[in-house]
Image (cartoon, rainbow, N blue to C red):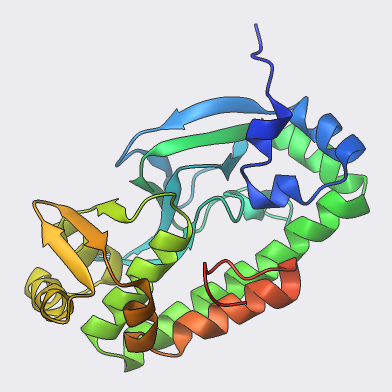
Length: 245
């Protein structure tokens, strides 16, 4: 038997919260709450999509997988968005791996119900298309950042993007996992983290990074972070950042 979804819980996802009350109530009738544990793979590259996901407290990393097994994060999705944009963009398969970076909750919707709601147009269609453009900006800017900026700047960007999508200053993530996300050597992540600790911007203890100076991180990050946030603000009516926008 389907579990009734509380509209207040659905509003913890920004896209759902942007919908008019009547439209939200209709979309909510198709949603199912799910728990997303750390490390769970939602999609592999090439998978046919049966569901899309609206995270509320979970954060999902989009990873590109090389033939030699190397990985690099190309985007991050949390309570700002939706997983499964290929469904309404005309494709049925996932182009990259989607893995849970920070455990939490989400709502899932079947491909059939998502496409039915999308085909009605209205705000639901508009907000999903705007989000897709914002996500494309994040993905393209990540590629630029990974190519041109230092590991320390990349780590600052990664920490801020994650922090924006959490209700906590603590990020449970080992240096090994961060190195996989950024596509750099673990030693590079450790050295970058040590520099941020020395500047008293973060604490790093036993697989947990705690942000202690948010403004300091924003001062240290490259321009890529603000470019992405400004685009979210322009397209979705707010910046994702807690201080920008």
